[in-house]
Image 1: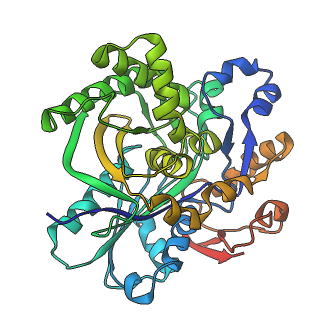
Image 2: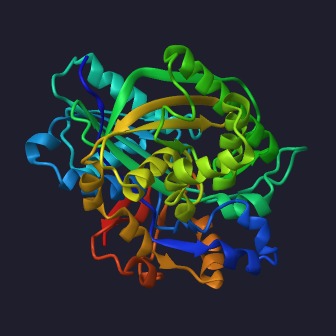
Image 3: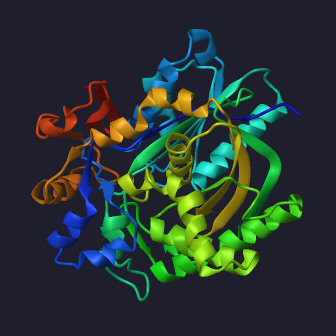
Length: 419
């Protein structure tokens, strides 16, 4: 069987962010309440940013690193999002245009809550494994934004805004999938999936989120345990504590990951509280670091965690990573792969940490103004021309590379500009 996995990967965390401790003070909430979430910052989407601009900005550095010959090997472009801008037209068409990919390319979109990214990843993997097109590559772009307030009606269906506001983020991860897995080589067939119907969180309208946060936590923990047990059926020798050098989790917020990891360590490993704490800090924390800077970016969070591990640990030899993916509603998967020795050096060319650090920090007044202005680009807007100069201090921050921004919506068609 051929090798398959991630040849290149980049994370884009938007143009602006807020500090979560400052948000707590602004909302007159005890900051210690937010400390348990293990989030430090979160990306704030601007009116002239959307899943298209995020996806293009994540993928362009990868595309620019390819020769024209390698670029033309991309025959599949999958966009994964729960933040779509149209019920029919896929955002992959816009992304394909602005990345200037060849026309002989399959373009489509996957929706599956936060599981969508893994669904796209696994579909791309199987396209490569099928070898129906020798040496072809696939581009998987996971892109989500939070641009909404909580739903106001319905028993047990309102998201707690005090919980939702500090955790909801925005961002995108782009991955080039091929038979040259220079970053992450998948353990083919080593995968356990687990799912059932549950009303934990959902988007009953396009700009709102509803659900039960406590139910979501319980479902996430339940799926983490059972997805791993299913993985173990396929890989009988697998041991949760010893098989994986590091663990990458879907990370709505770090506190949720901590709860799931603690539960599995208790039930399956029978570990003591001291062992659990030490194991969390050693194997899990490296993957949470980038997630702590962007908030919950939905389908992208697992792969943001994987990128964090690659950038934040010493890789002096191949390291096996256990990966847990979860999407509300729900579907989950536990799979694994190997980070290569050259992964760190290959990925550092994209400057993920530096680009996150160079985002513009919004004051609380600017944040409130952004929330109001985001109403201008709600789902279904037919015509609007955006003033890209109104927040020039954000757009033209320390980042020297050109990025794509939404300029205008004209008869529902979106037009973008490089700035």
